[in-house]
Image (cartoon, rainbow, N blue to C red; front, side):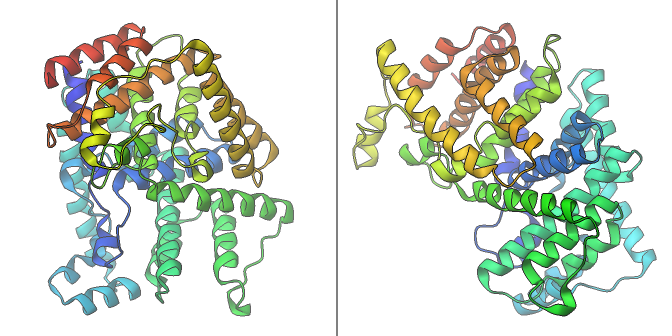
Length: 430
């Protein structure tokens, strides 16, 4: 457990590491690597399932693909390294238009990037057991070298997600350009389904210009992909939604819902692999969709909602004790929140193909009502993810109350592995 905790402490840095391309572009409050990974994983799941690929492998690959950046940093826009010493205006212009490099120069820079990221990943996972270390490294290597169908597919989805984020930023900030992201995407995307998805993206944002219209031959597929694109755009908002508990505690620049989902999905993979009776693919999917209704409901209501004071000191005083509610009060609150979230989830998924929509709603229901072994395990991991994050904040802010979360964790957790992780948290932080 000591090794697991060290790993999550290091990976937590990805919630603070902003993606380099957006920083160079002077995007206000740009996405972090953790937020980027969150949507790549969901996009890979949806589109990979449509392709009938191995979805568990695809989701794991998406989660693992940027873990190397814990130490190496985000070197994805390595074509733009030359721009770093230039003025602000020149940087932005280079990023918008792209830099023309020879194939030889691209390959040279690519080798440098690969070596740095490889060293970073091996350093990050060196204390894991050989089986887990091999799995994480193999998935990352497959992604980088595009060896399998799944690795090649996620590599393309990753580029499409970057393109989609670029379009969202430029649309919101009314900036022209983004052609460099289109060109970089078109260089790598070759899968027929993903090429059709690019056409759908292009038509949605630029189709009002006749010369930009692109035809998708299968009209039923075009309709499905349009619905999936709308869903991706909606959940992208979770990259900008701070978690309510941290806001109530007065944390500056707190983790977003998207970042929390990233952490929980990673925990589901690392810890779930040790639980023989669990279906890992189901667990990963459940982690990725457990909190997506927040797009419309906002983050979950905490038990302290109605008794908080306006001042930071007054607010924190309230959190010193975990609220004691009767069984009837708990059931009433749960039912109220559940109905609200279920309604939001139905609205969010209405544009998706029926099978996918039903799968997400079913996974959400299982999680909320703890109907399965996967749901019970994930609920406990969710508590640990919250406690872990506050302990990380408390390293910098000793005034943060923590007792209420310990109480919640010990009340909720009975899984042996979760209890062992709790004990390790106590040893490291108390």
